[in-house]
Image (tube, rainbow, N blue to C red):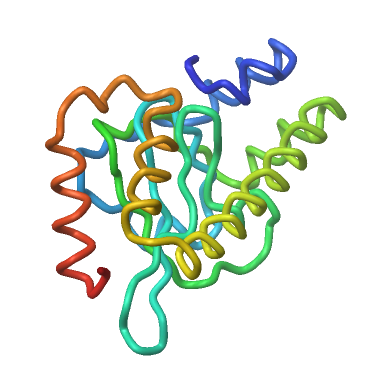
Length: 179
């Protein structure tokens, strides 16, 4: 149980969540299948970094959020609302953790007010990160954005020891219309 958010939850809730889920693993550059991002599942990240990209009406992708071993995704599953189209790609090292059916996740979480509060605080922090990422993308230079991205990935990730993930990320961005 490496997820930092779940480690803050009561032990019984944490144990139930891990037992309810099934393992998922993705290599660097692989995407989560879109049918899994529609709110049917909640993903608990234990290792690696997942990045959320949204496609504009012009066909360009923008990275709007990152989730590492401190978090959960997709937000639509956490909020039990319909999903907006997006792509989630494994960025740094192998992405792995537990995939839990949304109904089961909420049934377990709702057993503890402490767990519910932690999830709400996480959602707030993630939405704040998205707003900050959008502002940085609009106002910062490419150098500042890359430095920010590297710092965000490095916080809690030991996989940044190689340039290989960075190279793959930059290649993926250039293939998908990002500067």
